[in-house]
Image (cartoon, rainbow, N blue to C red):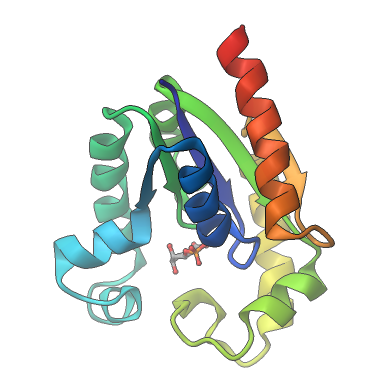
Length: 171
Ligand code: S3P
C-alpha cells in the first residue's frame, strides 16, 4: 500500500490530520520532526540553536530517505521538507504527496503562542510567514494535490484525503 506524505507550511494541520488519517485508514503514523528529535536526542529548537538549520536539513534528509523505503504510512513532514528536491523524489517514490495550505492570517493564529518552531520565533512572525510562503510557493506546488485547510475541520480534510487516496489506489 502506498504512503501518504503530508507537506505544507507550519500550522496547516499536517500532524493532527496525519494522525487521524492513519487511524481511519489503519496505516502507520509517522512524524518526521519526532523522528529527528529522537535521533538527535534534542528538540528541534535546540538543534537549530546549537547546530544550525543546514545540519537540521541534513538530518531531515536522512530520515526522509529511511522513512520513504517503508510502505502504508501516513507521514507528517516538516514544513521545509519540500525545499530539497531529493526529499520530494523520495517521498513520491512510494506514495502520494498532499500539500495542506492555509491563509497567512490563519497560520499566524494557529502558530502564535507556541515556541517550538524556531523559524517563527522572530519579532514579526506575520511578516516572516508571508516571506516564507512567497519563497516556498513553487516548492509546495510540487505536491500531487493541495487542500486549503483555512476553513475546514480536521474531519473534512481527512475525508478529502481519503477520497483522493481511494482514487489513486484504484488507478
Ligand atoms: C520547519 C517546520 C517545522 C520543523 C522545523 C522547520 C519549516 O515543522 O520541521 O521547525 O522549515 O517550515 P512543522 O511544519 O511540523 O511545524
